[in-house]
Image (cartoon, rainbow, N blue to C red):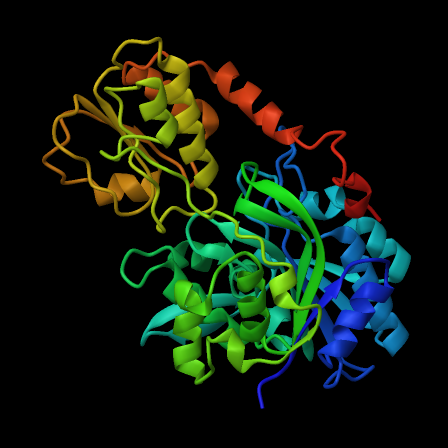
Length: 431
């Protein structure tokens, strides 16, 4: 008999979360003496242009509610673990913990905070000899609680429980998941089989369209989804955003290996009726027909420069750099054709003929094009990820008169986009 899924309206703390857990029998295998690990989604931190938290981060208020529920159950050994992406040198999990109130939770409830990026790791293999290095705390605990956010994603359509477990990986393995051979979704879909979450709770107070970092659009939903079966929870979360199990490749990979159904109709839904809360959300960004830049390039008449669409080999660390190059290219446009420059990222893009210069953003794409005969002149930007200033200088060296202030203005706008708007409550991300 498949595990049930609960869908509960968020109305008050901690009662709403407690009800969601009870409806799905979430603590049925929990013992007060268990070592509990909670894995929220604290994807990355930006100290210069703060990421608007709504739909991006697991709501701090709900994490505190979960701690209260666990404490009431008798649990005292509680760890919160995450391995945030380092998009700027020296800014990572510790800063996310501090900025979102987790250090206050540590002092208030005596929980431990662990940076999975700095943990010891255990090696697990998949697809024969491929390795995943997983933080020791994630696999050595007695009761692992996966606590993602309800969001769509530009590479994987949805980012829910399975995708959230990618944060348990060491940096080397996170990058390895983006390998062009087996692919992102096939790779990270294995993590759930090694971590084995006992409970998955999806934070749907906000739902994020076209996540994850600064650039998505959040909607207030006030929902909590929970199940002891990670696939069941993810299927329900996906459906709430307009996606069936057959739409999501990593659901199918996981289901095929575990023998589970990726048809939500095979699972019992408790609480709210799912059809009452479905809100289709887009996951993809439009690109020009000739794959030379974001859709706005065609609208504005930008020609000459080419920025092919990102693919699933683009790591989270480099994704802000890819977006920055789009904005910088726009800043150089003055109504006339731009220099014939192609700008590549990720691990597998290949330079096309017809461009005077090719800008290669990052070590991986430099390696992928080291013998490409289509490149007339390569402008290499080393780094993993490259530094912002190096990207700017490279684009200038390629003949693009870019303006970094245009990018900074755009980022400031993204950081402030929900200010003073009804329903977007910053207090939900404090403790």
